[in-house]
Image (cartoon, rainbow, N blue to C red; front, side, top):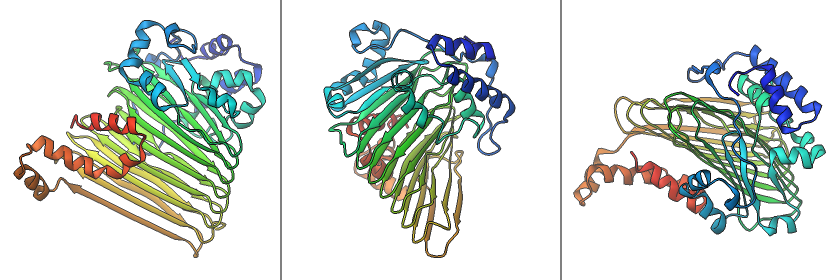
Length: 432
């Protein structure tokens, strides 16, 4: 299924057995996609939409790994996904190409009334609940790529945590692209009801190819009163993937939303996890790293919109650039007139490993009342020659000395990651 057309969209909807309102939504999104231009900001997007395979299904959604084809199972085994499921997680969804190929939750989920399904299954099993939250927080017509996701969405996770419910271990989704020039358009919806708590982990990888692939996911998160949600991502897309993702949460009174976002791969990434702090005393935190190497452009950051009074936000952005890579922080913090006595802090730090890499900080900070506080700090520095010399004088060679300094630079970020993802991040960064 290569050619993007109305016929393709109708065929996908028919294969999925969808109701008419979803087909109508897809077609409306497709018309909007054709009309909209690429974003006016950020890196240049040179995507050949005519060469992308927009939908590829490989196998069915299984609940036992033994029923997944050996080839695919071995890929997820090599990625450590299968071992992590048994040791660290309450449930998993694994997507391969355009569809979820494995999904399983532990008995704890059913006992506590948690809904954890692929988004396609949730659409069929809980149609009213799905429709209530779908396309509510991230509208299909926000930009060209939310429209494309609306037209082609497939896979992703749907999670509902009942009031005052806490899980012993995180839930996880893992997204894998192996095909050349594939488009992946998952849709994730998370509802954490009043007083409940959720920790959710997302992993992303892709096989390297000579042709470009496209990942344009959408995430909508609803954090109710006194609820907490932590969303951790380690993205290690291959260097031929355009990663254009829209992630947004709305936080009610005294709720807490935490984004922990690691960007270590892709050709181009544009990603700005957002919090709408709607309720009084709501809190939004974002801590992220971006490591850009040769031919990579990572345009990342966060958005915090303060609406409720006494709201707080904290953005910490760490960037590492080497071998001509480009890593930019781009963010918006807006304190509305209604957000009396609110506080916002932004801290952006970049470490440069050579003279040919680039990094910019592009903030948009707005305060509409005089009872609130907004602080912004940014630094750009090279590896300290003194510290490098000191470590090498203790017997380390230059490569391992640089590695140690970089690990120290991102220590705050690593502390926020689940253990198995912190180990994976260490492995990835050792490639510097």
